[in-house]
Length: 324
Image 1 (spheres, rainbow, N blue to C red):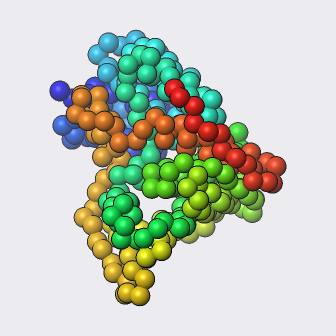
Image 2: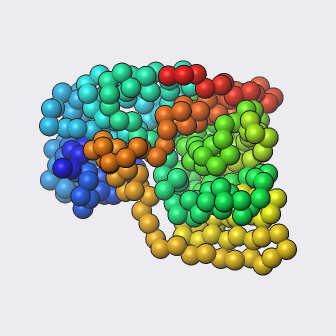
């Protein structure tokens, strides 16, 4: 049986969620929610889906199993907890919360209500990243030493959006897309112990951000985000026996120490759909959701520390994970 789902927030990414499962055998979008009915109505009518302005309409509907939140960052905690209290499984876009304390509240509410929690960290579902992790675990890269990753673009350059609000993204683009990179590094290298962040403004406020991460196991990593440049994305992991670099969603380049570069191609995949269907599988009892709640909380704790470091200009220790 398909998981009957409502999508809340019909900006460009909320619509991407709707499209991603259009022919899915695991999830069905049955209701849409957006406070701006005038803008959202043509999209809902095109799909023949009911549209509401109020989140409460879907929380009180017993026919709806789950909600997907594609809403401003500072609404996530309140909306996730409300969904849990209503007995709805809930998937939220990243960042998961605006503070580690709020992240813990969300996880606790969902655990107490017995509902599944999902998160929009779609980079875990790309095949090149799985191969990098496999190479690391099999020892082909040797001892992991350093990571370097960038996600830069001009998507927000000429639009007026809440995403440019420093209150929604105190670490700039690291709050938006840098969270993916934080998650990948946590997944591969473990918990982060200390960070140092810098943020600057050139074309618009907080358009350029960098972060240096030091892991509890001793490795380091750097994250770069520029929101006013041509698109450029990569994920690179260095080991004592070689390195691996994802250069796009379907291409990985690896090089063993003393060897030649080898390029590996993967078939195209749709990571948004893969994540939503993994969420649906977990709801249906088809296996554990692949991103743990500990990792969700730790991601926010790292963001917290990066934001604080940017404010004070000094390295900051990351808040240790508390049992939830």
